Length: 234
Ligand code: SAH
Image (cartoon, rainbow, N blue to C red):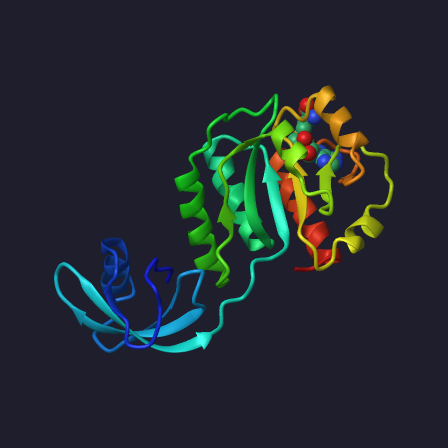
């Protein structure tokens, strides 16, 4: 269970109403039952249900189970899609090793102001589901030009480009090991010609092809994330 509280021996606090309901009425746990908690900072701790009443469930932190791992190196840059598809995209990015989620507003992006709080809630839910303790960071949306201008020169940006020649991206991918690097996937309408031109001239950008067919943005995202996990694995 993800909790915002500080986790340490003997800490005690109340679960949120939703979590209380989940513990009491879905899992049907009773007092003394043990659960695992994480907050994305202090690792994973065991905790016991100290007391329960109609309204609230009190938790008592017991012992450290797993130390806090670092965030993966991947900075996942994506043009926000319409809500349902965006929820899916965010969930897959967490499962497939994104350490930071960076919404990018390009010329053809459909959703100019994605709901960051909703993205953060989706990230926590995905982290709980896939059992990771490092909760990816969701940054405020950034304009495409600012992203490129601010991209640290020492960081490589992998750009999913349906027009990329079939150059083998693996050497560039191998070069990113142990360093922070980015993956950039375009919106449903694709990058504009001007954006593509900008990407192609930057020395720190590597275009990767994902086959000869036009993929939907969320398909391309999962495919590119899989290529990265298969080569860099982080
Ligand atoms: N440009 C296409 C659709 C873009 S699909 C059109 O206008 O119909 C959305 C994004 O998925 C693209 O911006 C690109 O980042 C990625 N993508 C789609 N198909 C791809 C492929 N075959 N190879 C690499 N990336 C692809």
